[in-house]
Image (cartoon, rainbow, N blue to C red; front, side):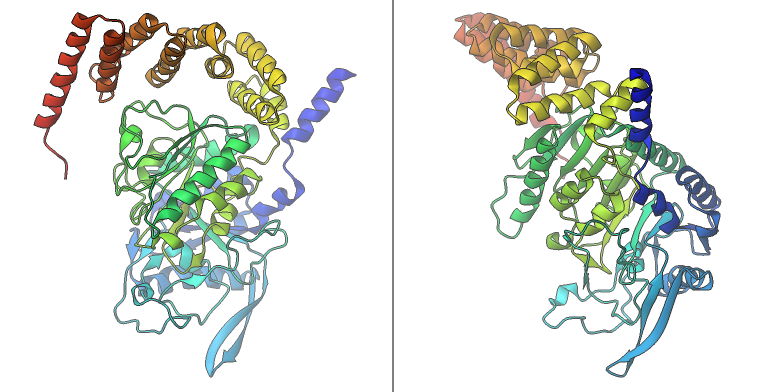
Length: 547
């Protein structure tokens, strides 16, 4: 009887919600027939998501990322509009405002458009378009007509609005239950793209999103603020810190950095499923390491004016490189958007954590349309579609390795609810049962003194990657110092100094080794470590600057 009930619970956990079952019927796939890979990917996505074949639309556009305004109108917008109207998916009627023709949508069966690799990304500025801004008082620098293809297509249900300057997004920061139920699709459509450096990456993004939707998103979350005080830019930090708070409340292992510099190349950043930070033009830091890889299903966003000026790249900007490194979804700007009109990542985080789809969460976080933002990833991706308990049940049944991370979230949630004894017991039991590195590390975090030392040492014994070894070793050394076991702390830092000798973070371990040697009165050893520090500084001074 228990076995049958258990299987019944699993079936319930695996079933998508009724509303979600209808979403593929509201999703239009658009591919470019001038790129042979575009059709193949369109068919693959339709098959994986169960999108009907009569909702796959071809356009015939130049297979480049940047196109003219005329090309957008003739080769992108109009073919999609014709497809929708001829197939009864969109019903519109004309009307007049101030002697100007307008068109309103009276019925729409589509809520979402997925643009496939090969569809142009952005529309270049056209100096022949001369318009007034839609609202009086618009700043002159905003009266521009370059834009992302996605953001312009979002207004497909509306005709007659100016193309110069941004238009307010009626979906922004809405508290409504969702875009699909009930839809707002007479006013706008959710338009995103499955795009990236190459077709293999796009296929992997689709597969990873579906897997993460089934089992949940599991790993660590990183937030790179700047500690900025300038009132013109402080909002960026505010959004990132609020996003961090949301993920902490959801039980994730989180790291928030508030220094001006970004996470460094040798920062022990591991098991990343969510990242947001700012403000650098091209990918830097840990993401450039050859051994760095996001966990499947990861979402990554770096705030910068040109983070998505191209997405079909492995090295330029942020979106393409982060997808290359394994992220399943990202977002960015194709031209200068100005900070206030970029996605508010805190709103996005709240929405995605509440179980809503990626693209809906993105548009709720975007204050403007007909502007510069693009969203890259499976539009229907819902990494939090299932509750944590449902995820744990399914992960156990399927013997998935992500179970340890789901249990870690459970431990954190118990701890947040001040059920500290239950959190400690669950962590201790499951760390031993699963021989789990993250759970042993967490066990050390939850304890003090000898118990913490034992847990960290066990995590180090099991660790297989450099980042984990560095992070846990630092935690272990900190406990030794608190316990005034400075000789043991010195041994840890000397070990780090040796293992990291060729890495950029080596100097801080040299400095800690020097300082602990001085504390212990070992002047010869302190002097030897000072020589190492001096050698590092001299080598750094000789290294050419990258301006």
